[in-house]
Length: 229
Image (cartoon, rainbow, N blue to C red; front, side, top):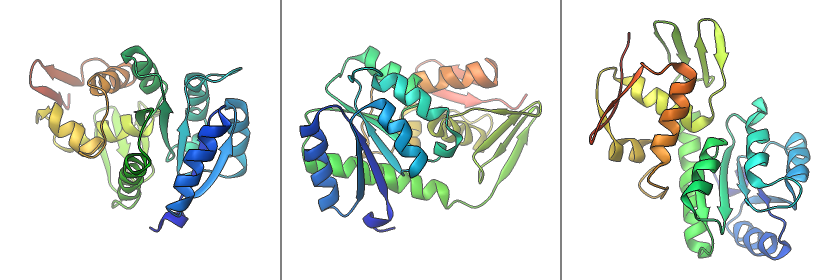
C-alpha cells in the first residue's frame, strides 16, 4: 500500500509536537489528523478509523494510558496500531503502556527519519497480518480465527489486543516448540522496531490471565512454548 492509503491520528496536548510530527508524516505522504487531548481522540476515531495512532502519555484531563485503554475497548479499532510517542522513558511507564494495549513505545526526542522508519515498520507488519490466508485452529477449549482476529474460549469471545493475538498465534502455530525471546521479538515486533526488554513478559502475563496460566510454559533462560492440553 502507498502512504496515502494510511490514516494516522496524532494525539498530543503540545501544539508544536502536533505541528512538527504532522508535517514530517504528511511529507511522507500519510493522511494525518490531530487531536489535542484523549477525549478529542475518542471522538475522532468514531468519525474515521485510523490505521495508526501516535499517542502522548502526559496529557491533562485524561492521560495517554487511560486513553489507550479506552481506545482498546472499541472493537472497531481491533486492527489499529497504537504507539506511544512520549518523553517518558521509564520502565514502569512502558509496562503501563503495554498493559493498556499499546503495540509500541517510542521515546522522544527522536529524529524524523527514525520515526518514519518505525511507523513504516509498524504499518508493514499490519498489512502483512491483514493479508494472511484465513486459518482457524482449535486447541481444546480455545479456538483461534486468524482472519477475523477472534479468539473464543468455552464459547466466549476473549478480548485480545492485536499484539497479544499475534503472540498467541505464533506460539500455537507449533505447539510444544520453544520460541526463544529473540525469535518472538523478530516475528511479532520485527528487527527494525525496538521495544523494551520487558515487552514480551508483559504480553505473556496478560495472555495467561485470559487463557489460563497453564497453557503457556516458561523455560527459564530460553523462551516460551504453548502446550495443547
